[in-house]
Length: 146
Image (cartoon, rainbow, N blue to C red; front, side):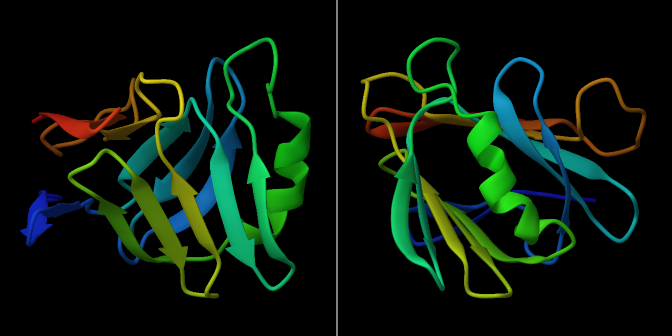
């Protein structure tokens, strides 16, 4: 059973060891992760995504339809499918950092003053014994519902 835990003032999302299996491209852009018990989780992005990998550092702009909608640019992240997360840290200031076992790091924080990302476990519309967990990274804070 996945549960939330803390490291100091930061929240550790229960994704360490989960594998990226797909990108959600309906509605907000998101990443779908699966654990060893087939429980799926979803992180959706609404703001800029900072990517740090072997190719350097770059920013993909927010995923809201209109300016900056980056569905097409997700192809640049396809190389992450099949890799496990080493950590998923939601900082108390609303910033989310995902670090893959390969060393690739993704970071998203609010640049608009609104919610920048959404975490849901289990994946909506799935049946599981997992107690629902939702965390949102807002401008300067976390919103937790579990």
